[in-house]
Image (cartoon, one colour):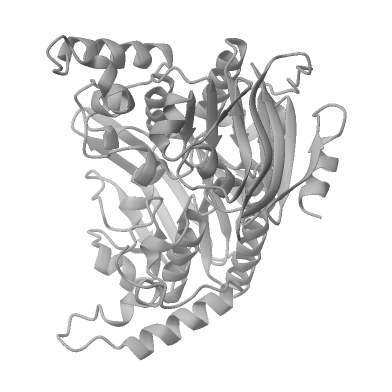
Amino acid sequence: MNAPFLRLSGVSKRFGGVLALDRIDWDVMPGEVHCLVGENGCGKSTLIKIVAGVHPPDPGSVVAIEEHDVLPLTPARAHALGVQVIFQDLSLFPNLSVAENVGIAQVLTGLARPARFAAMREVARATLQRLAFDLPLDARVSDLPVAERQIVAICRGLAARARLLFMDEPTASLTRAEVNRLLAIVARLKAEGIAVVFVSHRLDEVVEIAERVTVLRDGRKVGTYAAAEVDERRIASLMTGLELNSGIVARDLAGAAPLLEVRGLSRDGEYSDVSFTLRAGEVLGLTGLLGAGRTELALSLFGMTRPDAGTIAVDGRTVTLRSNHDAICAGIAYLSEDRLNLGLNLRQSIGDNIVLAVLDRLRGALGLLSGAQRRATAARWVDRLNIRIPGLDHPVHTLSGGNQQRVVLAKWLATSPKILILDSPTVGVDIRNKQGIYEIVRGLAAEGVGILLISDEIEEVFATCDRVLHMRGGRIAGEAIPGRVSEAALRAQVYA
C-alpha cells in the first residue's frame, strides 16, 4: 500500500485557554479526494492552517509529508512542498484584475523585477480553460459577483503546482451547475495524482465526491470513514452528536392576506415580466441557476435598483422604491448573499452591527443616540436569536459564520419588517446553524412575516418553503408546492 502524502500524529493546538485541536491523527493519500467535515468551531480551519504553516502546532505534534517530518512549517515552506489552500475568505486582491489575482505567483519570486503581465495572463487563461470557466481576464475582482470571485480563488489555487490542495468551502457561493463543473475538475486532479482535501457543509457534495470522510467535533477526531459507509444523515449525526430530522413543512396559505404583490416587473438585461404574490406568514422560495435573475430581482424589491416597468405593492398599496431607505420604510428588509461585504461592518462591534439599521429609533429627546437603548436593543436580539457572542462590544469578525449570519438577521429584524428577503441565508453555515436559521424563519412566518427565501439548494427550499418559484433567463419559469411534487421533480425542472 502506498504511503500517505500527508500524515498528522498527535497534533494539538491551544489558543490561550482554548484547546482548538486535541491529539489529531490523520492522513491523506496521494491522489485521494478526502472530505473534512464538522460544525463551525470544530477545528477544521485550525487544522488546515497548521498544515499550511500559518499556525505552529503544540509541542509533541508531528506533521509529515511523504514520511518526512516537516516541522517547523512556514507558509513559504508549505507552498514549496506542494501544499496549496483556498481559504474560505478567498483572500483576493479586490483592486486587481482576474489575470493578476490568478497569476500573482508569477511575480512573487522574491526578486525585484517588473511584473510579468503577459505570463500572468497566460497562466490565468490556461487555468480558467482547465476549469471550463469563461471570465474576462481584465475584469477587476471587486466588480465580480460572489460566485465569480470564488472561481477566481479556485483558479489561483490551481495555478500553482499543487500536490495537496485544500478547498475550504469552495462551493459555498456556487450554483449546482458550477459545483458539478468543479467536481469534474477535482476528479481530473485526482487522476493526475493530486490529493484534494474538500471541506464543505453541503453533505450531498461530501457523499458524492469523497473516497474517505473525516469528521471533527469539538476539536477531536470522531473518526475517518469510507464514503460508501456513510450517508448525509449519518454524517450530520456524527458532526453534531444529534439525530437531525427534516421533513416537508409546506402549508396552504392561499387564504392569507397578500403582503407583497409584484406585477410585470422588468429591468433590461436582468429580469422580465416577473409577477408573484407573497402572503402574510408565507415562506416563498425562489430558486434557479446562476444568472437566472434572482438577486437582481431582490435588489429591485429592496430599492437598490430601479425596474424599467411593472409595479410593487405592499399591503395593497403601490410603492415606489427609490432607495433602500424607501424599502425599509415600506416594511421590507433584505439579507444579502454576501454577508461579509454587504451585510456586516466587520471592524465594528456586534452591538453596533445589530442596531445599524435602526439608529434613528434609538435617539433620545435631544436627538442623541441613547447608549442604554442601543445595548438593550442589541441584547434583546442576541437573546432572541440565540447568538453566541463573547460580548456586545467584541468585533463581529470574531464570530463564526453561523453567528455572523444571525447578527445580520438581527440587524434587519430590528427594523420590524413585514417582508423579509433572505438571499442564500445559509451559505457557508454549518448544519446545526442551518437548522437554527430554518427555525428562526419558521418562527417569523408564524408571527405573520412574509419571507422570500432565495436559494440554489433545492433541498433547502423544498424542506423550508410553502411554495417554490423557479427563475430561468430572468423570468418565472414555474411554481411548485413541496409534497405535491417530489424534490427530484423540482430539481429536474430547475436544471432542465
